[in-house]
Length: 144
Image (tube, rainbow, N blue to C red; front, side, top):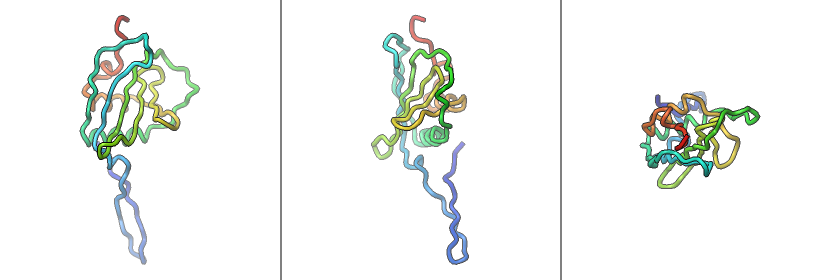
């Protein structure tokens, strides 16, 4: 579902003017998604980096910026170290980078700031944009 930019209502000399403002996602051209292990001992099936088209990249960008700040005092389930690096691109330059942890508390971490709590909707959307099921997004390490 596409999210429209907010509408700003301005009063000029008694008349109202409706304008649609741009959001950071409006400038996103694409998204690259790669997978890696944060734990040297755990290896996972090969995953070729994916380049995501403009509209799905923008939708995921809007979604991650709307995720709530994570509670970092929670106990988290097992984490095998699998993570996804998400890099949003605009005019050939990376404009936002995040790491989505596929295990444990399933946090999304930006290069700076507090981690965000992901939910099933986030993982479903990420799976949709890279063409993987939820199970394929979080496989067990090889040999386990």
